[in-house]
Image (cartoon, rainbow, N blue to C red; front, side, top):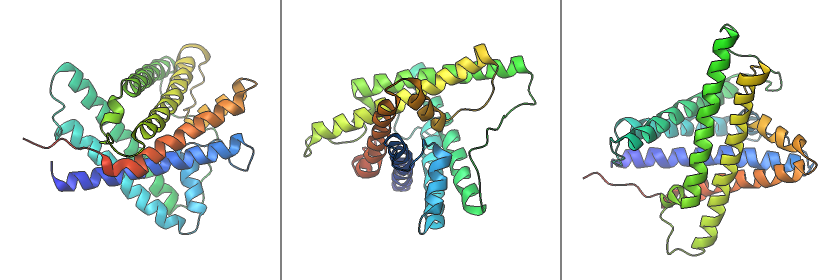
Length: 260
């Protein structure tokens, strides 16, 4: 494993963790009615921009997210950790590649916030309206299925511990507590992914409403869904904070498989 790859991966993990930390904190404050708002990636970036040295933070965060995307692409294409070439490994590597694409878009969004005076994420924008409605419905169903599979994989990976095993924590102080916090964070992320899968599947199958949904919509959905919506939203937000903190503070324990 090249040392440069490790450095890039670590920078990327920390940047990803920061995004989830901010989303979780803003959504938790909203659930407690302390001035926050149900937040997604766009809202998190807008919040960071408003802070002291916000533009510098956005610059570093955008670069960091590009590092994360680069690491995902390296894993999927060059396979430095020897994931393999069997069917299961190919699916895993394809998942890493799509994750790289997603975080490339998030990085571009960070730079967009950096170089624009103002940007409102409140307006409901319809995308891909140039496509035939039936084709767009099919597209949304495919996205929903992919998200559904991703959510299930996250749950299984967190339950079996595979997602946590990449962090070499065994034998360290408070090992079991740290793993429990990390597992809770992965469950929370999986929960939100499953809600997004529901949004896309419902839009594709039933309503014909082809608005792109994101994490902000998922948190808003939790808040309004039941009489205990705010509590559920708060628990999920704490999970996001746990997920983000897990990556920010424990990335130094990330184990990398060495090349033969």
